[in-house]
Length: 573
Ligand code: PPS
Image (cartoon, rainbow, N blue to C red; front, side, top):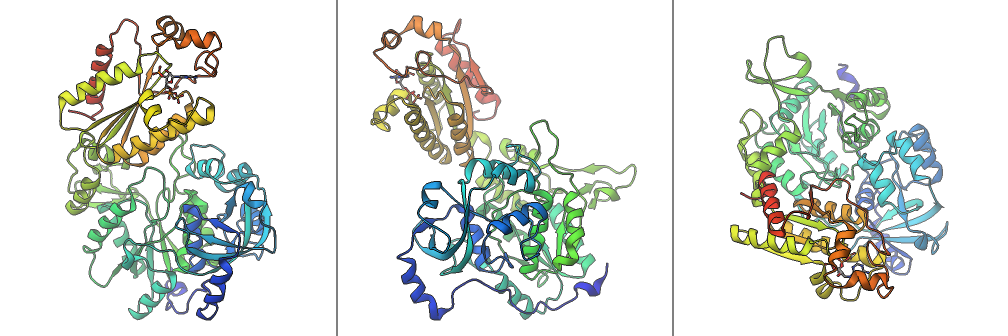
């Protein structure tokens, strides 16, 4: 390793985009009179790093020429290296109220004016082309693609920003250090060589070993720099993670290691994202970046193949490291070698040695089932912290979401299941039956697609709150649309609860023959419009956790079989 190339004092500041004190009063007055845009979570993260210099040399959200250059060649129009588009997406209706040359106020969800943006460009991007260019795929199994194609608005607004105030964070204030805060601290401590470690996961022994080795090899100090903006959906929440990191830093020798939080909204873009991380860490004063296996990896495709080669990120960062001004420390996967009772990179394991490893999925399974987590894998205080927020499944909340035609037997089975769960005891159970919800939550709604979606979203919201607080929600609406059911699943799972979709597969003919409420007859006679199965669609669930065939089975038998399945999956015991 060429030590001299990066052996430098971390002097100087990165340019920030905050308005000088002398102009603040005038700018705040102006902000009150401009069209205003309420930032999404991702835009808020991006704005913070634009303003505090974490995204230098960006001076705002990308304009059209920069955007093109970033997609095609990872470069801004100025020629500066920049691999990931940082864009401000807005709906068409808002775009129509602004034009190039105008200024807009960027606000946080509470209405606080964070910045003023001077519009230079306004355009409708081809977001599929962007996905293909940046992520190398348009497959929605890639979380970056899914966000881009499913959650961004169709018009991009480019322009430079001037910051009025940093976003307010109420959590872990002592760890929220800007690039210039960090540079100043490094300077004060005379840290000349700083290895940054990026992570979006809790850190265990393997990570500690890896960072130790990296710092030792580089003869450098260590900056543990986890991303706490948006990470991959399903990740462990940052509150829990940060408490784990705080435990862990106490185990490093004093004066060697610093922990700081990075408000980065990750895109899970693999190699390009790794290069982005390198630029961001350089801005924060780091001289080295650890790039491990599958850095910023998006997970796998539906067929199980990875989106990127696990070491492609290392190759790309290595190619541009000199230009970025940061040295990359490539790391292989660390595994525990039983005979040596220590960790080693997987490529240094000798023949005949026994390798122990617990994957992320296996670790989550052990947490979910309340199983033992060995000492060689993690530290007791870290495991304890994770167990506090991730108790075993049988102590977590969950939602059983019945779907099926009117008269299919959803409510009856849900009722029977509720009674059985209450008989078991120890848990709170709420039944959100279609009719009950329509009376109490959705009394003003009809049966158009928009109204049905709204009805199901409300059910999903209530269910996710119930599950979040450890309760059991039994939902029994028709819920005819697959996309809305999927959205509810995501909402419940994001709140930490389990989600079990039960398709009550009674056929239309049987439901109609039963016609307990006389609704089918009225629908056939044209007296009820948009009736599911008759004059309105029902999209059959493709992958429900459980399919109930009510023919030849009483509701009680169906409920009993559901109890067994819940027990088998670990939700009750
Ligand atoms: S949805 O699509 O999920 O919002 O429907 P949901 O809220 O579950 O419907 C509850 C009950 O409304 C009665 N009903 C209708 N169903 C379907 N289509 C139309 N047009 C309609 N009009 C009234 C019906 O009895 C549903 O109850 P269940 O328990 O499913 O029979």
